[in-house]
Image (cartoon, rainbow, N blue to C red; front, side):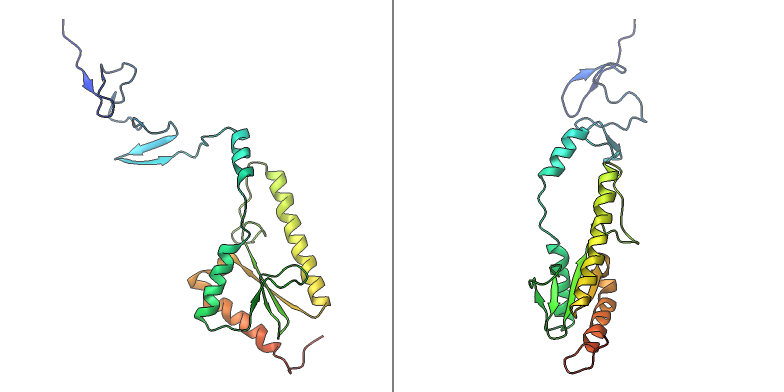
Amino acid sequence: MKEKSKFVHRNRGETSSPGQPGNTRQHPGNTRRPGKPENALCHRGRCRSTGTDVFSVAQRSAVMAAIRGRGNRGTELRLIAIFRAHQVTGWRRHRPIIGKPDFVFPAQRVAVFVDGCFWHGCPKHATWPKQNAEFWRAKILHNRARDREVNRLLKQTGWRVVRIWEHALTKKHAARTVARLQRVLAEREPGRKRET
């Protein structure tokens, strides 16, 4: 009688025969690696997730609820860097006016909002979550309606509103974004007659 060949597992030092539980080298097409999550596919030493969440729906909800936002601080800091790189001056942050703009140019009465592509429903880059879709759709549509109302109220009080999408803060679009803002600021220079 021929004895079965045995394989030594590199990670665990265990031995098992082909086809036995614990053997990960049953055939060359096996893509599962020892020590990797069950939802990971591995090929030639590189692993990637299959997209399956490791948490249940209730656990994922609890994890997401525990995350506390910091506003849009990252996008604001990117715009500040762009302002400094292009010598844009005269702006102030977080002035207490209607809608709480991210930046204000008080002399020209220009309010600048930096809108995140997800939170404000960017037509080019917004993604709609599949989980709890009804809630997120209502939330984002409410944000957009609030943006329109803030624009209307600021315009009534003599302010010009400039909304900058998050995707316009990349190096590729920075010059175009600054040029657009500088046109608005030039139109509203103090002493220049404003359109009503």
